[in-house]
Image 1 (tube, rainbow, N blue to C red):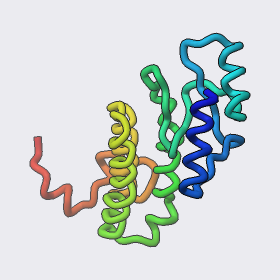
Image 2: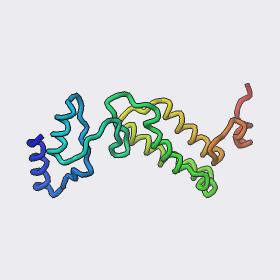
Image 3: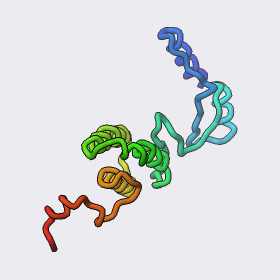
Image 4: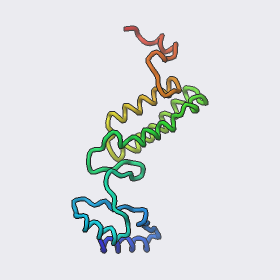
Length: 153
């Protein structure tokens, strides 16, 4: 750990980029609590556990639960606030959905697979915002011109 601290300090001196150990956390895996405390004191950071958030993404050494993605779903809800739907026409809502939420999904999927349940929740919100501008939409809330185009079953 002392060697790692020296490497980080040398990197800091060479590049001017300083590691803030007070904001950093040390996550021990498969070591005793005493050893972890010693290692964290050498670095000068606090000890933490999984799951954690890094760059807005949930991290864990185990399979993540759907609840770990709740902050991401809440962030999507903030982008799709009902007042924004009133200010946008359907094409504007389409652009907002495709650019903002599509970009967020791409960002998360670059780092980890997204569970199908999370994708279903996001898609439900996207459909509701697109068609009605509300939080919820049902099949009966389709625009009348689209309802006429659909084949009857």
